[in-house]
Each structure stands twice: as structure tokens, then as C-alpha cells.
Image (cartoon, rainbow, N blue to C red):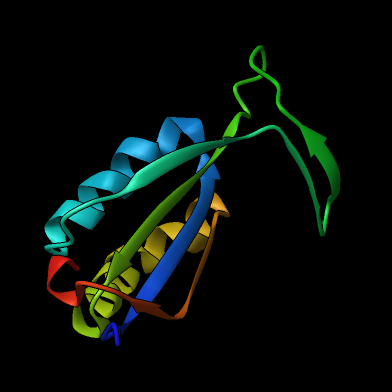
Length: 102
């Protein structure tokens, strides 16, 4: 049977202009990898939005998986930017194979 371990999956929805700040914070937390996925539209408290290259409001999801302590270090590092820039960070437990990679 395959062994799994629990890690944190972290999703950060941010403006494309901030993705470098987010990935730099991931690196500072000692997390070894991340993935960026473009987001074309959505809806939030302020209503629907769509990708808008002219206005610079393109959004991306930055996804990563990490051990608890690194996930919390990342969350603490990004906390001031959550309010300042209005992006969203969510995390939850996931089971992974080869947990030593995270």
C-alpha cells in the first residue's frame, strides 16, 4: 500500500503584478516549488470581474504545497499584503505521496 503524509496546500489569488512578491515569499519560507495558473474571471464581494490587460487587473493563482511550519511562515510573511493588496490566501490539509519533497 502507498504511504501518504499530510501537508498544506496553499492557494493565493493575486494580481499578476504581485506574483513575484508572492513567489519570493514562498522561497523565503523554504518551500521548494510553486505553480502559477492564469485566472480569467471571477466574482467577489465587489461583484464580477474579468481579465483586463489594459487596466492591469489580470489575476493568477499561485499554488504550492508545504509542511505545516513552512506554510505558517509563508502565511505570516504574506499577512500584511493580504489587507494592503486585497488578495486571498487559503490553505487546507492534503495527502501527498513522497512527502519529503514538500
